[in-house]
Amino acid sequence: MSGFLAGSLPDFPWDSLNAARARARSHPDGIVDLSVGTPVDPTPEIARRALAEAADAAGYPATWGTPTLRAAIIGYLARRWGAVGLTDEDVLPVIGTKELVALLPTLLGVGGRTMVIPTTAYPTYDVGGRIAGAEVIATDDPSRLADLRPALVWINSPANPHGEILGPARLREWVAAARGVGAVLASDECYGEFGWDAEPWSVLNPQINDGSIEGLLAVHSLSKRSNVAGYRAGFVAGDPAVVRPLLEVRKHAGLIVPDPVQAAMSVLLDDDDHVAQQRGRYARRRARLRPALEAAGFRVEHSEGSLYLWCTRDEDCRASVDRLAELGILVAPGEFYGEAGRRHVRVALTATDERVSAAAQRLIEAPHS
Image (cartoon, rainbow, N blue to C red; front, side, top):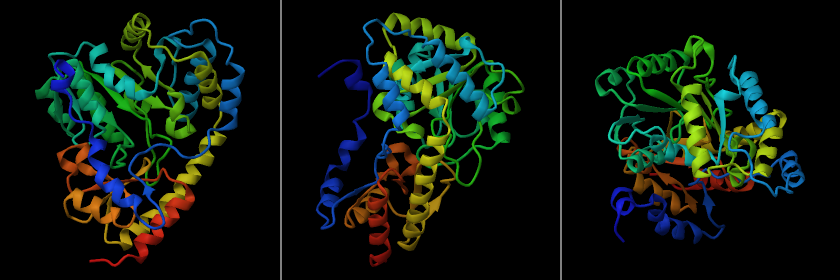
């Protein structure tokens, strides 16, 4: 195979876990897969009902989203994240946020220019830069933007994989630094509903952006908060001078959220109860799993938010993966998320209560050395 993608994209990292997965599956009590952050709990009934009621969708949907969906997005951002003054011009539904992360550098014309991503980060930030032909530089220091002069900057809070939450002062630094060089600041806030040891903030909050959303984008997903990863439901909101061109390109490219999914998104964004219930499920699993990992000799770092525990035994991440696979537990090696993660593993909370309890029991009972 030849061509741009074959020569420019990394190997798909999850394929390298096949041996560890096979070892974990051989455990007498079965595998506990804590490697991928895919929801396992039921999709809320309100979403399934709305999807079914909108199933008669013979015509093409609106790329911009229905008026009902746009109103739901604006209402959610105001109610939950303190955004003020947003209008329909400021919001846009997307087909799950992974496609937006991967395509945003291309849609913004970043090719041949510099973009910045976190040093330990969701791999699709880097992949999106490669697809666009941008120079991707990893840094967690906003003061470096003055020298790097990027066109696009990604931040992520609460972060995948390590769960760090950026406080208001730090977010303000990023906003000021990006504006100082004329960069678009894209804030991945997809795990925002899951803050454990600190409260997440949005860059759309006027306490962060001084009352202006100029140059800012906030990216949100319903996958984790509402257990609809299979629906591919997300949205981006922010500076209309950036959102409007994204809408125009997406119209031409046919990147449209299906009407039934838009209907489900609308009711989910208007409802807070199901989010609180899901947050409670993850909090209980976290409370069960974290002390068990610590009892097994792991140190949990960051992990103030998101759906992961970022753990280390001060050894190579693959050694930790193998160690846990012997217990029938599959986790993600930290090297998937950058060089800075080579001595960590990411442990997801996205397993059933029964499987999390099984993993915790195995960790507590295992001999430690």
